[in-house]
Image 1: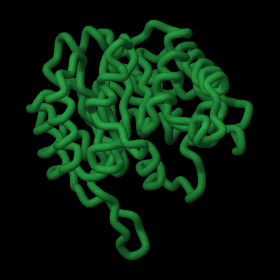
Image 2: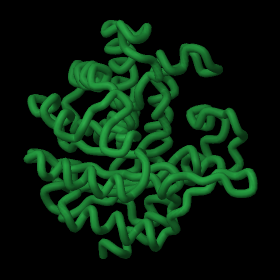
Image 3: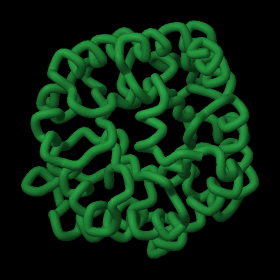
Length: 289
């Protein structure tokens, strides 16, 4: 498999994977269980989902480590196990998809607000992301993805931590859950201005709200003179509660039709976030030929 950088140069579009947590719930994960717990408690299920995305056509899969920084784990059953957890998750992904699919190390926000709005200091943040990045690299990932960030300071600190550890390709993806702005008020233009000096392989958006909002985000990123590859992994629509269950309304065909349009407009890496199954990704692979 070519490197992520080479793949971006060779392909018109690169297909990422879909959701982790919502698929685990469909596989029987109990409410209240953090997906990262399955790395130790049900590794066969973690591997199975990676394999299903690879079989659906994904060029890369993300490790089950979104919430695996030491700060985020400190009050749960995996406290003190960040390094082992991240390394093992990377190894599971690599074993599951083999050499022909890239493995991306997923790194999500700590869940804390940065000072002075919250307790998270720069030193604590950098130390946690440094440890996580080092363990993912030790586990054999091909690139690192800072995903679902909403605060600029935390994202920049995380990127600093990654660069202290590795020169592997780095992606930063924000969650624009207020339509076309993040929870902290960032726009695509703000993100590009703040990250233009970083050596990023891609920048973009994941999770968020509706596919219509994502379409607007794609336009704003491209209109803001984007200088790197655009990463787009939206939810399968806005979740709804039906008969007591949370349902994502976009079926594989409607999801794939809309996300393929994002690629047609210039998104270089596309995939899915919450609610997107291997069937959604298989449909998207077909739509992208």
